[in-house]
Each structure stands twice: as C-alpha cells, then as structure tokens.
Image (cartoon, rainbow, N blue to C red; front, side, top):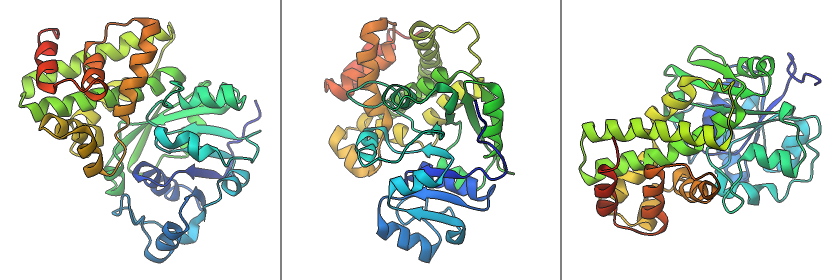
Length: 336
C-alpha cells in the first residue's frame, strides 16, 4: 500500500452539518488548508462573510481564508487525498449520484453514524462493494465526542480505526490538537456498527426518561444495551483479535445516551413525552440516525438472530407504531 499520509496530504470533508463542521474546526487547528464540500453556495457565501456555519454549530469559529470550499463534489474529491464523508446516512446515496471523479488512490474515511437505508449496508461496505475500494484504503472515525463540545474546545476523544494499525496512527495524527485525544484500532467493522447501534440505544435512553423512568432503570437499560452491541458484533462478524477500544464503544454509547447534546436521546425523549414521530422529527430539524438504524438492524438481525430486546423494542415503537408505554413495560420485565 502506497502511503498518502505525509506533510502535504490534503484533507477534505464531504458534508456540512454539525459533525462535519466540528471536523472542519479540528482540521483547521491542525492544517494550513482544508477542502470542504458544501452543497449550498449560499452557505459558502455566508461562511466566507461571517466565519461560521449559518445552520449548524454556529459557535464554531472558522477561518474562510484557509478553507477551500466548493459546491461541486467532484472538484473537492479531485483536489484531495483523504476524503472524510460526513453526510447523514439517509442522504448518502443521493449525494453520491453526481459523483464522477475517480476515487482511485484516495483514502476514504467515514464519519457517518448510520447504515445506508434499504441497502442495509455500512458506508465502508458501500465503498468496498460499489467502488471497489480496498479496505486498506478505508478508515472509520467516531467518538465519544459531541460536535457542541468541539466548538467549545472541551477535551474530547476520537476513535480511529483502519485495517492496519500503522495507517490508523497516521490518520489519527491529523486530528490531534490540544482539545482532541485519539485512540486507534484495526476493527473497522466493530467500530462502524457500534456507532450505528449506539444511536438506537440513545433513543431508548431518551424515551425512558420521557416516560418517567428514573436513573436506576436507565443504568440497567444502558448496561444491557452495551451487551447487545457486543453480542451483535460477535455474532455478525466474529473476530478473535477484536480490539476496538472501550472508549470507542462504551464511551460513545454512554455520551450519546446521557448527554444533553445527543439528538438521538432528545428524539427519544420527545416520543416518550407523547410527540408523534413526525412531530419530533420536524421539531428537531436534524437527522436522528437511530430512527433509520432501528429498521436496518431489525432487517439484518433476521440473518443473525441475536437476542436484542432493546433494539427490537425501538423497532416496534418507531416503525410498527406500538405504544411506548406498553413496549417499555414489557421491556422492563426482560432486562436484568
């Protein structure tokens, strides 16, 4: 594998939401120039004039003079070496439709926290199967980290995985700064699917709070959720050398389940308080990845048949429109 990580490596972020903006802020603090695909020219103009994203993570101050922004995804991809995809999974395919630029020789990084709906595959699997990108040229980055705390430069942690540890360490170097620490691993599958699953459980955590359950129940709920994640990973992709860091799985699950900044937790809380799914989605005005993940994991688990009562409960509430109160009462009798 020819290394593309060197002093002149050019990094690009594909996407312009809150997490993408947080990654841009980090990369601006570690590199002289960062490429950024922003699909809306009006947003680009606003950032150039006001030094922040008008819609997402407005607290993050940006330096437009060191940003090479474009609404042409092909231009951004042609000019970069490392492509960091940070688009909500439900919009991923539509954003990829205009892609004509070659991905040959590019290093693909996914910071996407969901599976591709209907196809029920991860983003790394998509690039491997559809674009024939070797897993040697694919990486995954995840939390535990919230974009809002990055904007405030509070100490945060990124988990970085690549097929080879040496590559993961080189990629991790791109994100290290005074407020970002990193851990590295080689379990691409484990980290990517753990990120997908934790969003489902964050909805459950928020929903339990909205329904009036207390801290004691929530502690059991999140503990059992962690076991469900481990069970699914070990059944769907057994790996005796699995070395995904504890912070990358458990830490990300905890912060997403408990934080005030968690959109999935907020989404679940609203439903627990009586909001319809549609009303909760409209009020949030952001994508709660766990909503779509609940359906994807339900379909995938038909193959693996892992005992996942919490994930299945979320599927029943979110996609079969069962009563949250009734489903949680039954769930509470299953958890131990």
